Amino acid sequence: MEQQQQATTITNPLKDARKEALKKYKTLPEGNFEWLNENSRKFLGAGYLIEGVTAEQRIREVADRAEQILGMPGFSDKFYNYMSHGFYSLASPVWSNFGKERGLPISCFGSHVDDDMGNILYTQSEVGMMSKLGGGTSGYFGKIRHRGAAVKNNGEASGAVHIMQLFEGMVDVVSQGSVRRGRFSPYLPVSHPDIKEFLEIGTEGNPIQGLTHGVTVDNPWMEEMIAGDQEKRSIWAKILQRRGEMGYPYIFFNDNADKGAADVYRDKNHPIYASNLCTEIMLPSNDEWSFVCVLSSVNLLHYDKWKDTDAVETMVYFLDAVITEFLEKLESYRDSDSREDRQTFLFMERAYNFAKENRALGMGVLGWHSLLQSKMHAFDSKEAFDLNSEIFRVVKEKSVSASEELAAKFGEPKVLKGYGRRNATLNAIAPTTSSAFILGQVSQGIEPIWSNIYVKDIAKLKTTIKNPFLQELLAEKGQDTTEVWRSIRDRDGSVQHLEFLTENEKAVFRTYPEIDQMDIIYQAANRQNHIDQGQSLNIIVHPDMPVKDINKIHVTAWKLGLKSLYYQHSMNAAQKFKQKKECASCEG
Image (cartoon, rainbow, N blue to C red; front, side, top):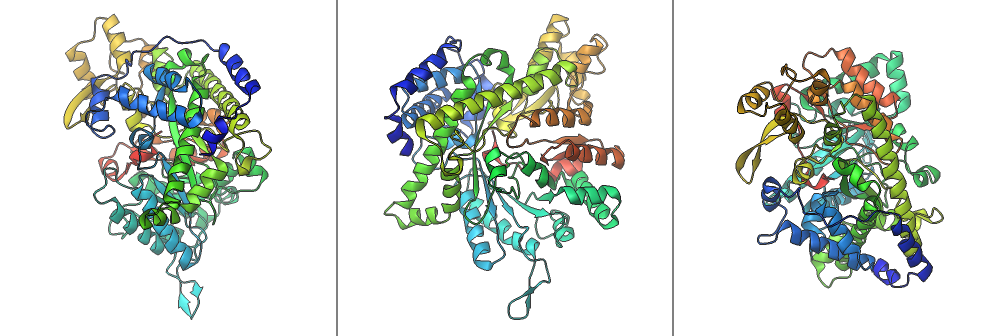
């Protein structure tokens, strides 16, 4: 309610300043939802929209609700128009829950588990409630005593990993019958005495099979490991081995995260203990706060169309409205006559505290490789690196500007008093597997495309998807034929065998496995300077890649200041089966 009440008291000078600011942006004609092709509509209809409601109708509902919260006449039309041009991708919980009576429009939660049974049981229930309400969850277990440690009454602690089983069971039970299966990621420091037991999670015969775990690694530990500490080298080798076998543990470089954290967290010494389920969220958690982040993304394929508009600022305004709705819904649970609602709030109180006091946003991107291919820039080209820097600098500047406007209108939250911003953080690059497909089948997040042709199940029908930029090039050359596409399919989506393509054209259409993974790391480090949170950053490793090269990728990521590494993909079938326990809620 806070925003609505304050929105009515916006001073005329502020309104005038906003109108003046808007004049400098070019106005776009109404879009025609070109991205809403048959595949996108089928996909949305299969899990995001209520029967009988079109995508356009749902977008209008979302836009109207945001305008109502912000108290800004004309906001709905502007947001709807930017959506019609394909500039935005909405996070799954926003599609499903924003503006609806029940359900929360939030993607990610992160809990903090302390070393006492009361806190452990409360946090377990908190994670259960978060999963029930549709969010992806994670927890930091570094404060829990190791297995065998002394406890009261001459007992022995069962250790951090044993306690993680409680959380796995809770998420599994809560997820039964749910449309979107809940997901949970436990994080444990590499220096914790239970680390070896932790690294056995997910292996054959281990009691924990449903969790995707992450290891937190500090700078002194990395330095000692590199300097030759044999015990640390043995643990590091096991981490890399498990990533090769299963795709995880995720790696979270906590000192890099703290050094690159939002200014307010550095100034006030709020450490970032762990990330989220998809390793892009860099927010503090403690006994009072369970972090909450609201996600959605801008479409880089259309960067040239939106860079001179206020599309980024409008998305920041929108995401701030989503935080307001989240708070209002939880307040309605808190103040409800229903005992069940009040119990819901009881287990969401730490998340409520964090959202109210921090208002953290995680606006991300998708369509990066699509943009490069549309411009015929190879992923590793100088043009790509220059554009990468430019885009993320522009997005950051526009995001900060919007948050400052929001603070002037609606005030700063508790944590940001004196900072002149409405939001503690603004940018985080989430995975966008479903979102990218919905948005006209653009490339996912910051990732290269996996294949130039693939088959996808949409609403129980198998559909062949071809890279539209490659198809355009082939058509120009008179080579857009069944025979050519079959040859691409038979080579796992590669075009390197096509002799009629130039070397540059082959480079432009290299697939994920064909791109040097060091270039992915360098590019990520290049953009990290402009991102206050983190990036869901995957790497792909060939089964025959030497261990020293795999190690070099990981160590370089750490040295260049990257905050985390998400999945490690491999072309081996066993690992493909094990990995990618995806969280639909965590889509940006």
